[in-house]
Amino acid sequence: MNAAECSRAGCRRAARWRIEWRNPRIHPADRRKVWTACDDHVDFLRDYLSSRSFPVEVTDLEQTGVQ
Image (cartoon, rainbow, N blue to C red; front, side, top):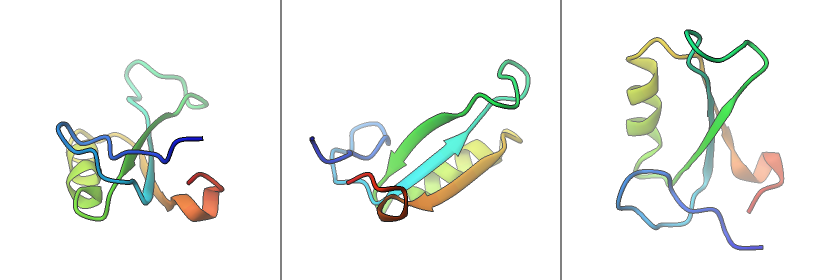
């Protein structure tokens, strides 16, 4: 299995964070999209989604069992 990469455009660093989110205007409550982030971009990606009023949850990839 390949290591997860950061979802930030242009970044190919190893991801350490899992960002689950959804757009409530088009996704039902049980549908979640997943992005991954490195330490440098986790705040940017979380803030980008939160500024659009999307529900966002950030967890450590190690806690989810993804590496």
